[in-house]
Length: 362
Ligand SMILES: [Zn+2]
Ligand SMILES: [Zn+2]
Image (tube, rainbow, N blue to C red; front, top):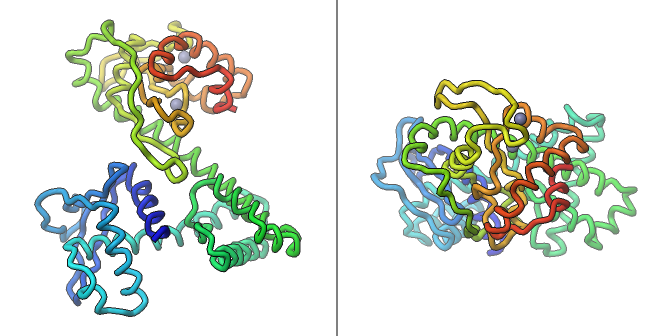
């Protein structure tokens, strides 16, 4: 049951930032049809496929709740174990063939995660092919040990959260085999933590870029009817998410647009930074950046980080700088931005200290 709850959480996370199109698994010999699946962080939504033929003919978006999912997931297990009748006998859920496809996709994504990890080690770490093989079999032993000890999480390549890997490293049963095995179990786990951190950075960077592309596309329409001089900062609610599983939250481009407008489309490090006129918007081109990074949302239980007060306008150079520049210079930039924002952040329920923000940039 817990396993299925975890799988459900993983599906919500996986589909939150990009809807996917999948082929159904029909119960008879018929061909599958394509459909789109996405999540709003709470439920999964199914719809007709946009990019694949033949598409499902469902007319409206179809909501799947956790309860429905868990019921069908139990049937999937029996069905996979060879009980072909389970599907007709144990469920009359109309969405079974969609949910089966989704579960299968997640199983495969775990395999892909292992492949991704191996590929990353090969390219980025100085590790021989023989050692990589040893790492993978060591991780299998860790999986097995976790199963034998009835551990809550029992598949390393299903875990996306580095804290959980650290927890597993500290388990007595893992420490025991590690001592005997001359650290051959913690070594691959440490590499896996580095891989997860790398993926996190990649995802943050992509979301950051995506936000600014969304902003450009939406900007013209959104500018109408908004008087930035009347903007009032106030605390906003955070959606309730399990932050052990979730490490990211959506960024709303409309908030970013308002923030850019409040900054009058000039770089907040210095208004003297020249950029250029955007062809889409006709305004000075600046980018939105979250001063307290969105991936810190887990530390702020009561107030959203996706508020205008936490979004700064930066020229492209300063924006790259703040992400990639050396720590001393970046700290100076963050301080400049923070000193301008300190009272506005407070009004939004974010009474942070400069040290807390800086720790995200080191
Ligand atoms: Zn940024
Ligand atoms: Zn600048």
